[in-house]
Length: 109
Image: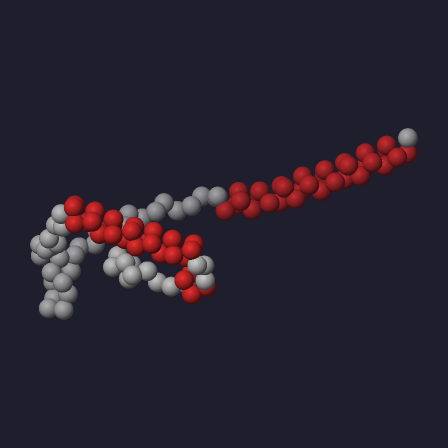
């Protein structure tokens, strides 16, 4: 009986401490959420007048010449073939030098 009474007292004490800690933690948040001043509207920023050292914003952007999709596909296929060959050579003769060597593909700089 004394054990049950002791464990109940300890549990109630622990619960009281937890409630006080939780109340203290949330009270600070309530104070921070107190009335905040209304945000002032942002002033409108107008673009600066162009200068001789700044790029002209209104100048048309020159488009890059379009590359045919077939040429891109051929480059990708060539890259895949080179990577497969590198993988096969590493699997045939695995060495540290082959593992860290760079590929000869033009797609990787």
